Length: 162
Picture 1 (cartoon, rainbow, N blue to C red):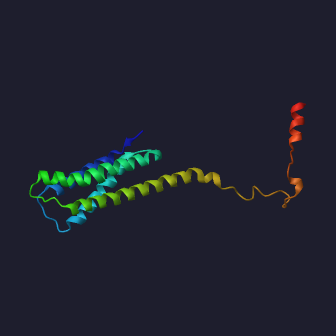
Picture 2 (picture 1 turned 180 degrees about the horizontal axis):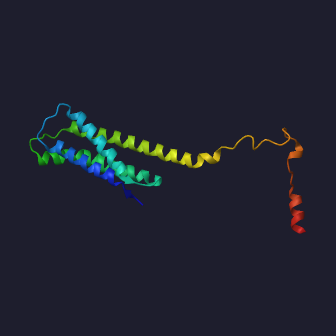
Picture 3 (picture 1 turned 90 degrees about the vertical axis):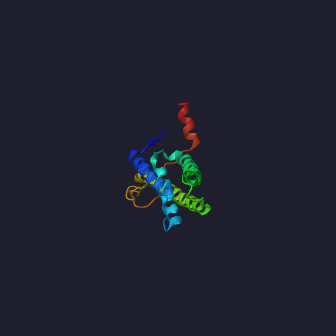
């Protein structure tokens, strides 16, 4: 079952409105390509964390995020931008920066999520892996043949017959 993290979703919508303003307004910014990279890095990261999934569906989440943000958002935003505001020029380098920022955001988010899942598994199972050495020491201090129980198959068969 997938649930939505409401605070992250609200933050995503606010960021999306800000990105829409930057994309459709007739303003010229000095570091245009860096802004494209940063905006898509942030949007992709927020989109990835909007959904609270189990660790088994992380691959599906990565695929959906890649399709929606990297492919759809990166290319689609430039196409829509040139249709909505004719003064804006379609720029292939903007698409490249969008895709690159989105990919960096996706890789960073996915890596963090995998690390977090691995840490939670270690915390759950870590307390059962450590065995104190004083518990497993023999009472005589040295191991001898007398400290082992030897059972042979013949012994088991005799018990079953009796």
